[in-house]
Amino acid sequence: MKIKYNFEYKYHNNNTYIYCLIRKKYYLLTKEEYVRQHMLYYLIYNKGYNISSIFVEKYFLFNNVKTRIDIIVYKKKKPYILIECKSSCIFSQKVLSQIMRYNFYIKSYFLIITNWINNIILKIDIKNNIIIFFNEIPNFK
Image (tube, rainbow, N blue to C red; front, side, top):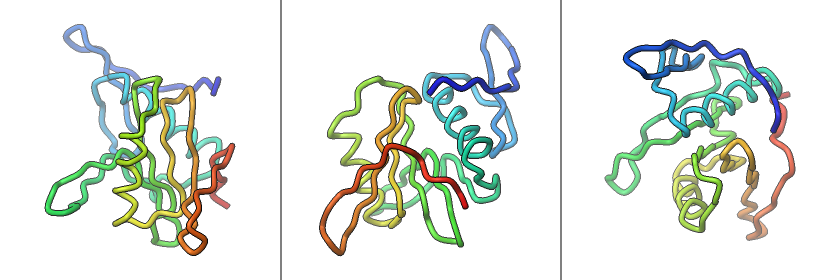
């Protein structure tokens, strides 16, 4: 995606920090944080999602293991989109397995794996036992 956003940056001790609209503070600008912030801005400014419906780096307990979800979007108080942000250009089976494992518990409607250059957008149809792939992230409305 070739979209430009006006991020808020701060510089300190030779490090660059980026402001997160959701968590309302600055975070060290790593490759993964870059992807995460672009996805957040895209969801809010291009797809119409409410800031109040998006949670970032939310922790869940899976099989007694504390796990961090990059982005989870709720719609009508239910998990709607589960997003895994990656800094790597390569999506592996391990990443797909990870998000599927998370979704086994969360039961989100859509799953997205993104590195901001490429997105894998899918929905699991449990009733028909199939995975449906999409070209675009759904709008909020």
